[in-house]
Length: 313
Image 1 (cartoon, helix red, strand yellow):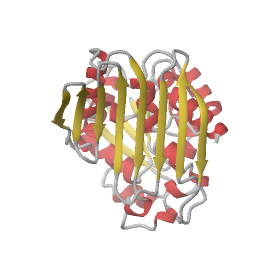
Image 2 (cartoon, rainbow, N blue to C red; image 1 turned 30 degrees about the horizontal axis):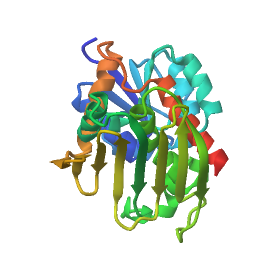
Image 3 (cartoon, helix red, strand yellow; image 1 turned 180 degrees about the vertical axis):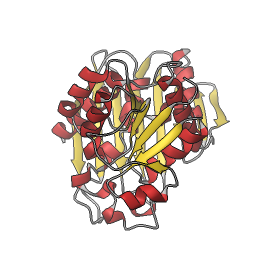
């Protein structure tokens, strides 16, 4: 297959970005959206939005708001195409289960941060045993929601709306996927959580998540997510008996902290590159030349964690 045909469902900011990156990766891109004018505005070839008539494509990308992922991924799989579903795979584990059952090795979940160079470096340090025996993991994300898309009313974005699958728990589910990835063998169970709207934003979803988790071998994890931090903050910290590994996105630094001191290196790679690499990986997956970084089974694990955190909160 030298010229993969890919249909992108959804012409919002995520869908348009997928379309551009896929085209740059060598795919023939078509786009569809319930808003035909928005699809036309992308500049790509379009087809009418009809989940029963998606056409014959080698790959399909589901880049719609979260609440539509399960239905659209199911329709995409029914065509026989290989499918990239934007994170999260579905709203709940119950919605994700049929996708996992039908995937047959044809699903990739859009966790582009697994292809972000500083996180790859952190994962490599962890695999090489630099931390020693791990005792705890901490992940955090925070940013003032109205600043995310300053040209639009934040109250109308999917992040702010329950009917579109918004809320910081699923919106920032990258952190749960990183816990799945970096946490290694074994599943974390939720010990306690707060999932609530505590700030002044005019939204009908949670703006704050605090969760404490534990693995059967005793490893403890903390996850903190919010729409309220006035300055962007994000990071991962892994504490072991040999060293603490820490990636701080806001400071742009990767640190290895031992009894002898702190070895710091720059970690300022542009996250945009991870989206480019994701598109390239999906085209290679469609062509049968590469496996997905996150398949349906792996993608469902972060959804299950989100379910458990919401139930505990």
